[in-house]
Amino acid sequence: MEIVILPTPADVARTAADAIEQQVRRGPSVLGLATGSTPLGTYAELIGRHRAGGLSFANAQAFLLDEYVGLPAGHPQSYHSVIREEFTGSVDFAPDAVHGLNGMAEDLEAEAAQYEERISASGGVDIQILGIGTDGHVGFNEPMSSLASRTRIKTLTRQTRQDNARFFESAADVPEHVLTQGLGTIRRARHLLLLAMGEAKAEAIAAAVEGPVAALCPASALQLHPHVSVLVDEAAASRLAHRDYYTDTFGRKPAWQGL
Ligand code: PGA
Image (cartoon, rainbow, N blue to C red; front, side, top):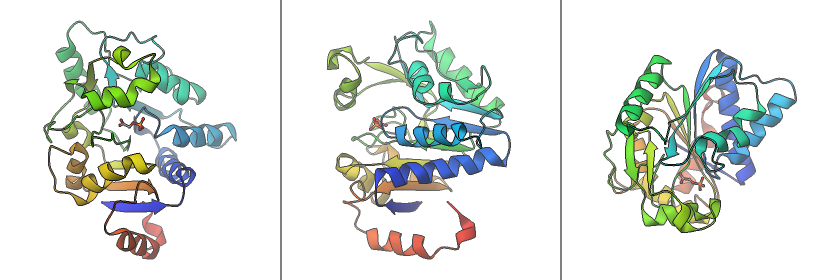
């Protein structure tokens, strides 16, 4: 894991956008997209670069991490709608290049299995954006998720439903169930970008990065991945014991290495 501590959330967004831009400019790419508040700055940055004329997503595909069960694709809080609103609808992805899970599928297990197949058939995700929950979840892999899990249905914790209540009229309106890529699915992406900003994420980041690999903190599974960039602002880094070490080594790495 490489831990990159940046002064502000805007620096996190720019650095993540740089990594995605580099990938997209390399050739046809498969992007893994997350919803939630964390990647919004990154998406705004990418939309800005697209509008400024240089950056095209016409040769990219995208896969969403997760989806609520029981919200139709047209519901404003379905992740289908959210990602279109916040990112994909404002750039030039080809029609049908943005893939998500169908939370209204009659057979949710079959939907999950087909999603795994679609990701594999695409050649696999080149770069995956991830946020982290205050309980250490990535995607919607709540504590005790198998570190080898594949896409499947999960039941949200009370904490996550409370955390996400701000997007709904009340906490009671947050769906109980979701479909989510598993930790094993996420770990098959070639490069993971884990982003976190703000004090509320500091404890989860410390557990994910410096704690043991344990199902109790699902994001700790990323320690087993060969290429993870953890981009955090000062506040999200505030509980890390080895901040100086991360900053020193990142500052002295060869520039050609990139993230
Ligand atoms: P947030 O959520 O980006 O809205 O903080 C992250 C997550 O729950 O994974």
